[in-house]
Amino acid sequence: MDEHLVEQLIDELSQFGISLTQEQAQMLVSYLGLVIEKNKVVNLTRITNPSEAITLHLVDSLLPLVSNSLHVDESSKILDMGTGAGFPGVPVAVVTGAQALLVDSVRKKTDAVAEFVAELGLGNVSTRHARLEEVARELTFSQDVVFARAVARTNVLIEYATPFLSQNGVLVVEKGRPEDDEITEAEKAAALCGLSFVSRETFELPHDLGHREILIYKKVGKSKIKLPRRTGLAKSQPLGV
Image (cartoon, rainbow, N blue to C red):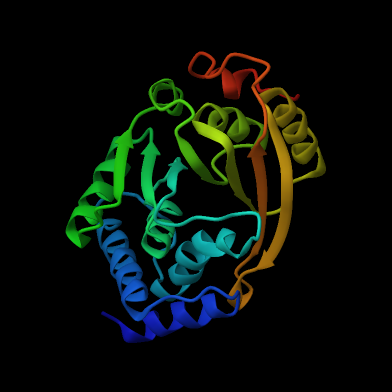
């Protein structure tokens, strides 16, 4: 365990008002170590410098917790759409204690994440290799929070997330610098899906490692269209365009 990385994580998060216990920080640094090690044989991330990965994977994953529009605790059910190497799902689960389901359509990624989770004994995290539309048919209206880290345009993410969300559940989208037309299309898609735009918050990551925008949408009504649509339609015929 590199104590420098643990201290870096605690320090950088404290700059945003997020406090971690030593144990939580150590767990997250251990998780990151497993990702970087496995990345030598399975392509999970392009960020392999441990210090950069602290900021770009761990701090970045936890930034949404700064928002007053978001509340996640041990009673919350959260879903991470397109989890990749387990971000943001694993960090959020470690820090909040929420029950987290991490979904990705690439089996080697979910297999790797499942292996890391088992090794660290994270009993509140489970993984699923599937398309989002398939899982949504099974877990309708079951999630308090759905997270998405830049895996698609926001209108597409809204469509994917809507069938998962319970009433008043929230979708958290993390972006770099979304264009105005992406935000406009997202608002139209949200209106169709029964979601309301709640907040847009911007952050600068430490060490000039990037600009982040957190977009939050809340499920306030019923969708005007039947969701999920057939697999693939969210991307090929996106809502709000």
